[in-house]
Length: 432
Image 1 (cartoon, rainbow, N blue to C red):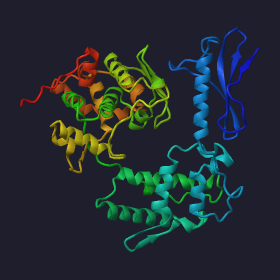
Image 2 (image 1 turned 90 degrees about the vertical axis):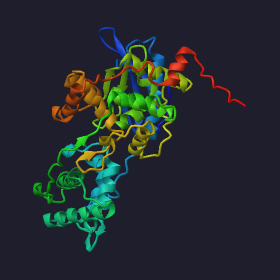
Image 3 (image 1 turned 120 degrees about the horizontal axis):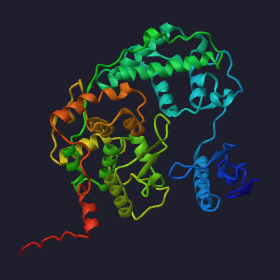
Image 4 (image 1 turned 30 degrees about the horizontal axis):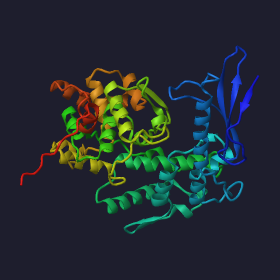
């Protein structure tokens, strides 16, 4: 027997209802019924603890709440834009086919052929193709693959395109592209022409030859923070409190910036000391245990923010320039008197410290603490041992200097320490 309780009923995208799905053994679970982009979808509901909602009485309100959130997110997703015609003609241009791919229309038409799917980097890839493939000019070299028929593009055209793109980047930046950046252009262009073979059926071979694949950059010296440097940041009242909480999460949890800024209070489990991250570059959800002192910082931050709702972002009030977080972190370090050369060097063999390197700090500290690769990847989402091996040198350095990683946070942030002890600092009256 299945009982359905509706929370919302309409035909628009983002409508949702819940139903109790009963099993033969007498158990069951709550299921969300959603309409996403005009199509029905069913989804088993999972609570903050990562478990299915299986209690019919106690979980009904939670099921309604989670379904309402899912429906709200569905309403925010723009509908896929179909191509003007059902199928692009045999003389479709590179620009036409590229936009057909990055807009999602190609996937909407053909489904998961040749590993097509929802493209998380569609906006970035679209801009990269527009800037360096469709049409641009570098010095006296002008390339305009965008107006060429996909079927007419040759390997020579692609070679000239990549060369002109490198010149354009050099003129704009004043320094050459890194090979990893060249690889990104190679990768997106190769993928475009792979899809033009299948499902596009516009040609039978890929003009992006493997011989055009860039080599690897030489290994850079990656920066990370020492424990005393992080504590100096956390103790500085002149740095916005929200930004200091961000530094704690980066160094003690190892999540990427995109995962940190998308983290909501509903995924912070104070009762069990667990953190859940559903937004990640690899699209692999992460659930892991958090140290008690880190959870205490989050608890006090939640109280400081006025105990916001479950769907509120954890990381906010950063008060830094948008898109300038690397410079902001380095400015904060200078503010507290940290001038270690490796953090600020402009030497081409050194990677200056970025916000992303709070994640590198986490991995380096974890290796120094003797944590295994599985424990680390549960938190960072690193998928191969090779990704983690680059941090071994920093871990050995910490061991040689006998630095202890992950310092205690009980008294690290003065505002939280005072709130915990109910101490209000008194300002001495200026003498007359």
